[in-house]
Length: 226
Image (cartoon, rainbow, N blue to C red; front, side, top):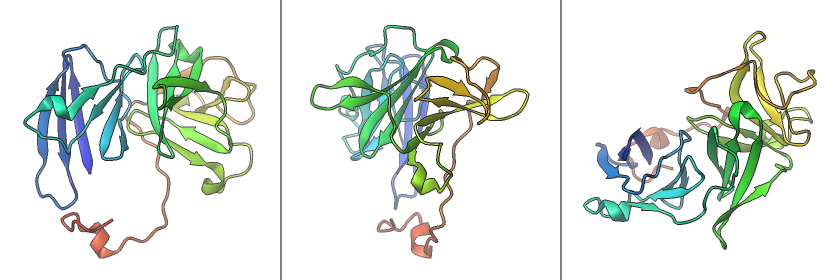
């Protein structure tokens, strides 16, 4: 399924298309409660799209529900709430092996906090360790990947790569969770914010795939294609 969204004050406009369909389905939702979606892409899980609000709350869009009843298609959850006491500048949500992970960033990166959603209590629980994985963030799409899968030298694990680049060198900005500092190259000493870097809001991280697709898989109108 492919989902396109456009957010305006108090409104969210949806267009989606399923495999095997030859037209887009469109709808709009009026946000009576004042829920403001973040600029992060939603996470698709068990047939639904999970939206992260700018204050850490969640909403669910279910395209499989009756399109005539927008209340069934869009549900704003009472919890979790805002896990941060400080003002949030940016936030992201990522699929973590079927679990929901969120990243909240303070003004100019002065703090970075990582949370996992505890489904039993529906609260964000802070974590400070990605293990042998590395996190790539952007508004277009974020992903968590094991460094073993990327086949890169040791030392890249437990990092968060941001869509920001050093203005002079053009090097990518990453946050080292172990040290709690930002770096723009592997040799600098790091700093506790990302001043001096430039944000790229419309960029995306691409993971190369060497899987060769069959003609049937490339046929969008073929419903059984994987």
